[in-house]
Image 1 (tube, one colour):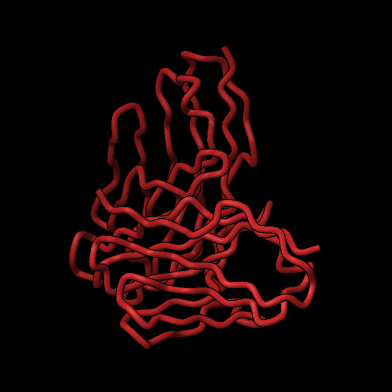
Image 2 (cartoon, rainbow over the protein chains, first blue to last red):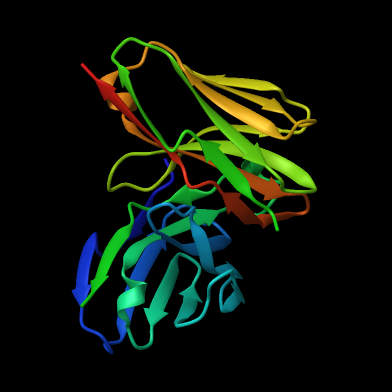
Length: 115
Length: 113
């Protein structure tokens, strides 16, 4: 079974703090993704990475950065947390398009509260 | 703009009953459509995935249909169980760019005994 794990299930941070969210996958997938999920909205893509040290902006990258130093690990960084970044953050991974019908596998999510 | 609209926003059904969830999309060009189930506090888990040429796909008590001409999909839950209580999310991908997915806001299903 594909396993995607996230470092924290719940996180409370103060405004202005630097926040790191970690994601690890164990299936040797090339692609990894960070989404945020807010009530009444669909998942929105923040960043994705298709290879080590490679990244592309998603739909809402402002206020976020990412790091992928190893294939299995993808980190989301909030440089200076703000209250409007309070949300559920979901990590996902997938193999290259063309294999396994490109299924995305999601982690359990991190519920971040910024006070 | 590619959009995915789901209805109803939420519904409550009695255990053992059937229900149908709707998904309309404007994504073009279309590649595939997926339905995910998301339990409270968990990440989404895939139920079905359908390409342009498939108009129905089943996974146990879940049956998804796709009409690519009208850009509509439905998810039918048969003989609902308490464990079916979850959010169901319709997701559509654009041809040649499977990195970019368009997500619906989801339908929250509550199954009551």
